[in-house]
Image (cartoon, rainbow, N blue to C red; front, side, top):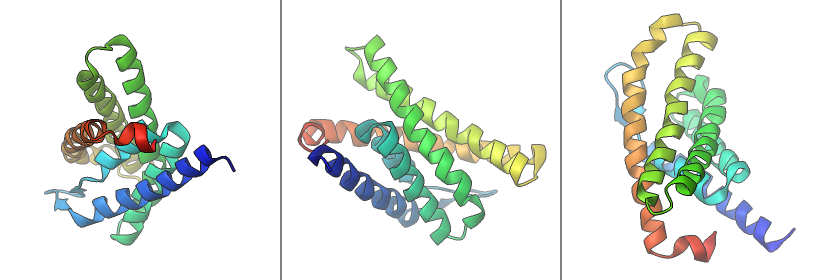
Length: 173
């Protein structure tokens, strides 16, 4: 195994653990269902730093594990896919926005994070309405998921900018 591949694999495992822990440690319950947490900030960071494949698995495994450990096991399969896609879409949208706005990386990061979190909101609505059989009643979760997405955008952008300023991106990724 090449050193770079091994480094990405180790970083992906670390991100999966960070995502799981940050999802479980701070949970602010929402009035109807679910909770707000900081895990999605690390989901976005994993996508940005590890790339699509490793970011997908780190985000999906870490978030699904948190669901299994906190009593939301019925969401774990969807969480694996949705959070993995949040990492991939967030990273792809950031890369595209950074090319279009090379002097405005902060704005590109916000665009990337917002695109990823939009996938989260739509993904959980579709899963809850179609696969869990709640139909349009699942729309009641959209405001809570949108708040979770907003928290994630702020957390993700702050995290990537902190990593960037500390030089961690060039050193470790």
